[in-house]
Amino acid sequence: MDVLDVIDGEEEQARSAAALQRAAAIMARLRAPGGCAWDRAQTFDSIKRYTLEETYEVFDAIERRAWPELKDELGDLLLQVLFYAQMAREAGYFDLCEVAENLSAKLIRRHPHVFSDVVAEDPDAVLRNWEQIKAEERRSKPGAGVLLEDVPRTMPATMEAVKLGSKAAKVGFDWPSAEGLFEKLAEETAELRAEVEREDKAGIEAEFGDLMFTMMNLARHLKIDAESALRGSNARFRARFAAMESRGGGAEGLAALTPGQLEDLWAQAKEAERQQAEPQPKEH
Image (cartoon, rainbow, N blue to C red; front, side):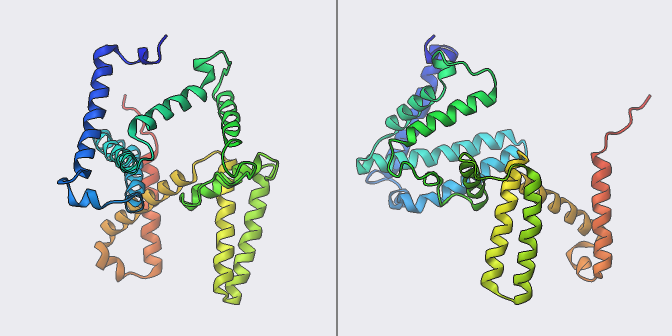
């Protein structure tokens, strides 16, 4: 079966190709002489911060299950790809077709259980094959043999910490279980407290970083996404604080309360959240 056979019919294939071609043509027009002054002024470095912003907006739409918004945000994220590809084409590095062809070749190469005769019966087996193929690919790249070299230094620090821990674990440099990480957390917390008592700002920052690094590795061992977990906590804090404002007369009302009263409002907000989350008994 041809790869394109999974797309429903020639008409759908043509529609997909035409839509992407039109978007690429619009991007080229914006960058051309007589196009948009702002778009023409952009560089790889000036655009990259927008790429990160758009990625987080995609995450936000997914977490809110805002599917119409997700369609729009994915378009904004695609715009970043079109922007980079057009700038690369102008500089003679590569073009959008090469990006797509490179991706297609990579997907086929990294899915031999689909496009070849390799057997992978479960997601874990697929992941093992994927990592083995990636390791083979890395051997031909500059810096090959340096295990941590392919972990980008510019990714969010929480993600970088998880990636670094995961890479080191491949050669056995890891905690054998989550239990050891709980012990490490207690050790790092004590070291942070010691630096706080010494009022050593540089030491405080270093030990706080070590504590966070340990937390990220604990998340890896517990098989949870640290970024998603923290975003969930942020969302709960927003909701609980909004409930406190509602009960306490707004921001001005909260400012007039004592710490004890604020804590009581926080406990009430948590209890209301817990009751709302509990399954309601069915009516007979």
